[in-house]
Image (spheres, each protein chain N blue to C red):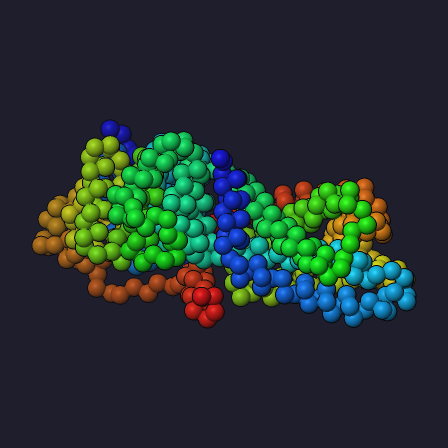
Length: 248
Length: 268
């Protein structure tokens, strides 16, 4: 076993051992799914035709991944505060290995949380159009998780303030979520909003996931994959850079 | 026997404030070296620079022949450290903490299993090793940290106030093991402490640092002679004065306080 794997495994152990965290972070997506899914269902059916829940579910799965991924950055602050960060920083492994292990662990946890939401969506009546496309959906879930965990790593490395972190993060992820096409179709939007959607990395994640699950792409799969893939690589590098600059 | 730690004209500035001001000293291999000083004198800052986690403003350092600013990996392999404040993962068991350390330091599996068992038993945590660290008392955590620092058989052991919060029994137990280690295997020990009797008893040599400068360096006996004091504590006060130091809390301390408030509030 090497350093990357053991640090990743540590993250998973901490996740599995905290049922409160698993259940607690389901509240918000559940609320959105029920309130929006059933509340706007009839309106959506009249305006666009089809089941809103099917449209919404990939957006809510993305949301669960987004929130868990970005918030995983706070673990760097916790580890700094409770001292464990020092233990890893004086170990004879490169910072790159440490940050990869952490990011991978955070991403897998976020994905696990997304999978739980996926199952909840199924319980509420969501049905994927084509089961053969589920592996593609998993790839998109993983890319969303990795991309936004890297963003969490950037903030976790730069910010020092335990109380400021959630505030700043909320300020960032809320717009990312609302302007991603997760809850409404990108049809007939004002120009400015359309532009915002195009700039938002989550848009491509939601689109890829939704396309894979219900076969309705706003863009197309190669575009989504390329944009997400490049952004993930860039942000992973940026996150690693900031993490490697941490001094105690 | 060569020199394990060589420090020359080491300086660390934080903006206007000079935490460490042109200090030089050497620690011979296999010796137990006490680094003494009042609060805020620059002890921990120096240890951070020796252990690669803080870059010096200027000056040169050699640890086991390597430069901590450039040959970090070699330096990190050479030492084990017990930090001044806790550094365990509370959500893991003692054994998992040890195992994680062993893997980070590349200790082969068989050796890891055997040494973890031996060390955990040595610090008297054998029957608690499967428990989460968050259920441990302060003293137990400290003992586990000492065991962990020794897991990868380091050449140098850095101990930043290692015996804080420990009862005399544990203190003696740990120090006698460390002395044994230094004698049998030539492990060099670099430690800080506020217990002068402890330094007097175990250190072959001590350096006294105050306001970022080394004010004396000698064997405890010679220091007592020089200052004409009966105990090392008196000698220490003769060298550093009676004034009580004000140490500004750093960012980490402030965060830790905040975390306590949080945890008290609702997390458990």
